[in-house]
Picture 1: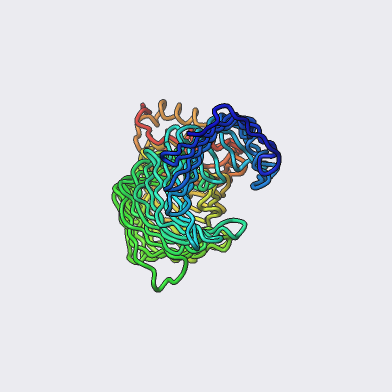
Picture 2: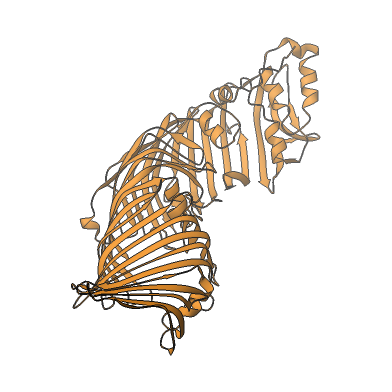
Length: 598
């Protein structure tokens, strides 16, 4: 045997600049094996040990570093790989590598363990904190390509990459890749990505590394996306400014995605008991199922999709199970079958619904349908209106969305309280935003006051009523402006009677009610339960949360809300010209059962 146990290897030049390390060399003449061990080689602010072996079957060399800082590694690697100056990174790393040839060609195997990594760029859209990650690369050069195997495991820390957020502590990541590199093309024979309680995905395809931003062409199979982690990781930042931007989620999703140059060629998603609930109460869907197919173009070849849920709701409106059949392609969506969306005890029946250029400034929508009878008491609760009874049913004409304004091409007509209500000039600005604005003119004719007062429980009034609510404007579904008039129709020949209870209820509107109630409780009026009236009416012009009040006609010291007739005669006179909207609402009783008239 020949050898040197305490050698010194020094030199200058090459990749390392200065070489200064202890060395041991041994040659076994019986076996023909030569070994080398070097230690203390200064590299990237730490030291490295090297072991090598040569025998008749081939050779092998292995290197191991101590713990290096990322700052030192970055400086060491600059001749071959340089990061942008505005990108900063801190942390520690330990690196090992092996290169060998056992007669079948060169093979390389390298691994690195990074701990406490923190990084950021100038724009702040690439950020990492307290990350622990391990990576391994195995490479085998061939005549025209290099076979690759890559494994990555992220076990701790958080990272924000443009629009994707990773929490490796909650959802550890494991990635394995097998493929080959030829020139600027990385061919992926198999890629498997898993994150605990979050994702299980596989992919095959080709990555083109030549463009400044590499592109991928291939197929991705989503074995599982688990919610809520999938929403927080992949979706929350993308959807932040939409109605889906603040959801509580559960359930899972499977599917397939085909891509060409990183652009989606086709998409197939299968939700499985997916639950979505907006924390602001704007959207709720329970146990969503079905299949979604999407392609970038070609509406004629679009595959039919379906979605169903057991419960649903939006903007305070809730309902039961529903199913929709549709096609989706490019930025377009169209129902293929009429459907019904339950709303409380009624429904929105949709005959036709098409959306074009979805999400674009020139997005367009076409709709036609009907509202099947819905209890007004439920709607009142949903929109924080005074509680009242009755139902709402209506025919909805052609509706279109253009320039972010939803416009009704015709009138919305419904029959309620024995009469007819017509909505015209209806439009809704920013319908999908957080603060939609609604505009309309509403006219009601030939309403039966007996049915109206029964609904509002303010006592009994008989006769007919007409109403105009013109220039109605709602902001985030709360009224901010209108000119409202409710009055007895001119020439009405029906019987006009008003109960003492109704007189007591209406006496608070417009002020001056105390005298009316006192009159009802004294003198001859206390012996009557009902009174005749000639006409009644009230008007409110709302602007800036203040109502400018008037009645059916002027009266001494005010205006008539109810103008009496015959004997005994009773008038209700208002004397407040300006009333706050909230005060006016509070003065309209929806249940007058507590008023006793003696």
